[in-house]
Structures are given as C-alpha cells and as structure tokens.
Image (cartoon, rainbow, N blue to C red):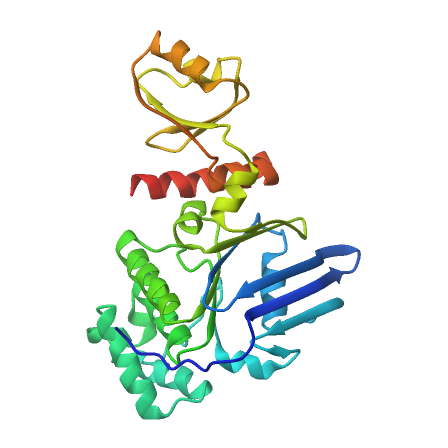
Length: 322
C-alpha cells in the first residue's frame, strides 16, 4: 500500500457550498446551490452535459468565482492556498508531450511542494503499481492513450492531496486500466482522501460513491446516499430477462418504460408486477424476474428526460457486459 501524507484539519466538511449562484449574461449556470461534502467521502457528481457540473467544479477550485453565496474548501474560503492540498484531473487531459515520464512527475510534485527525492520515490512506487516501470524514461508522446491517462492520474495524486477532483476519470479506458484506477481511488478513500468525481457512468457511480449529487439545468435535484435516493423513488421497477421479443414486455398495459441494459431489461411499471409476470410466463420463458428499486440510470433519465437516455444506457450496458 502506498503511504500518502495527509494534512488534517478541524473542519467537518471538505467542501461547504452555501446558496451559490453563477450566471453568464442571461444564462444561469448554477442557481442557489447548497452542498456539503464530508471529509473522506467519495462524492459522485452527475448530470447531463451543460447542467452546471463543470461550473461547480471550477468554483470549488476557485478558477471562477460565484456571483453570490459562499464556498469553503478544506476550511478556507476564497483562498487559492487550498489548491495546494487538492489534486485535479480535468476531463480534457494534458501532459507535456516532450518530457520523460519520471521528469514530468518530478515537475508536478515540485509544483505541490515535494522535494525532488520525494517526487522520484513516490512516483516510482506509483509507476511500479501501474506496471509502468519501463515507461519511466520514455517521453509522454511515446505512450499509449491508456498509459498516458495513468501517468496523468499519478501526477494528480502524487503529492498526497487531502482531496482529489476527478472529471470523467474512466473515460476511454480499457477494462484493465479502468480497474487499476478504480482500485487506486478506493484505496485513497480508505486512507482518508476526499474524492469527488464527475461521471456519466451511472453504474460506476452506484458501485463507488458514498454520496451522489445530481445537478440539472443549474439546480440541485439529487443529493444523498444511493439508498436514500432509491427509497425516494419507490419500488416500481422490475428487472427481467425473457427469451421472446421485448415487445412482449412493452405491450403490457402496466408497463410505462423499458430500458435494455444488455443482459436484462429494466422495466418501470404502474400496477401490480405480478400481473406482468403472469402475462409473460404464459407466452415465453422468463429466466429473471426481480422487483427492485430503480437504478441510478433510470432515476437519471426520469429527471433529465429522453435526451439523456442514449448515453446513460450505453455506459450502463457496456459496464454490465464487462
């Protein structure tokens, strides 16, 4: 296990946002947002493109300032000094392509106050962990996309920040590299690091996050644990798998919506689920029938509407097949 130095503080929340609004001309990007992120938690930020996620993250990082309201980060308000304790992985990746990997990590470590030896030793540990020993003396431009993404993740967590903010950290990764980074995030969290990550992958948010926050059209629409969010949406969902065509499901009068998640269908019903089971059993073989709470993907689509469905279902189905 890699040992990371964490600086303790007396504050209870890593982030405390109170009544924040940010506008661009006549467009309100974030409206009256209040949000508290407990220290040491994994907090998932979800929402459609253009919903206000990136604006919120940039305000947390003090890249932009809110028009009204207050943001306190790691016990400090409106101070860039807190950024020295934050690791940030932007969605738009960017590394110095002509630099060798080991020199690059030393450079990023120095920016966060590490000595050359600390950066080298910690960087070598991470490179070994990710199977990148042979890449240490190669230029970034010679790396594959997956290798470069792992190097950028290492640069983000190298100095042992109190908090890391990851914007779509799993985008474009193959299953092996994805799992390596996922396990690293979980280990960082167990060691006390606060983790915020923005994602369109609803299944990953379900699996990893202690809390989930959803912003839609600039307003907070979800905030809580997965359990509390699912309870709020009831148990009107059936997960099933049949041998026949999906139309057998969709044509039933109590069925409101069918989502194909690859290995099974998730069905929202308005009525007695047993009536659906009896109807299907008389017409085809039913190999899975489970009454469940709605998935986060389904809740996401209920709120964001049909335009959010294709991307969310693609992520969910891909994860399910993997």
